[in-house]
Image (cartoon, rainbow, N blue to C red):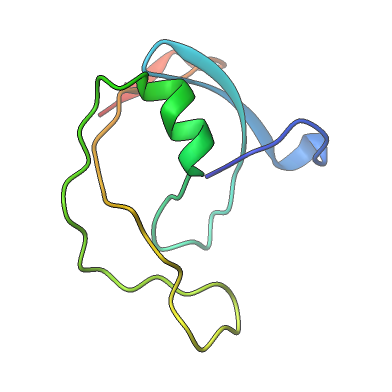
Length: 86
């Protein structure tokens, strides 16, 4: 997931993540969801611990993996449908 303020409205969805509302770019072809460290800190507020992540994640057509700080589980609610996931 990427936070977006100015992205195409067709690909952006409002999600409530850990009780914070964010505009998120949806990439239905992605194998995992990513957020920036800045957005993670805003959402988690120091209350969510990261665990080690040994997964290698590559940007499209990249040969080197993205540097990941860790992984976690977050509470997510799709505001349009009120469906929640952990």
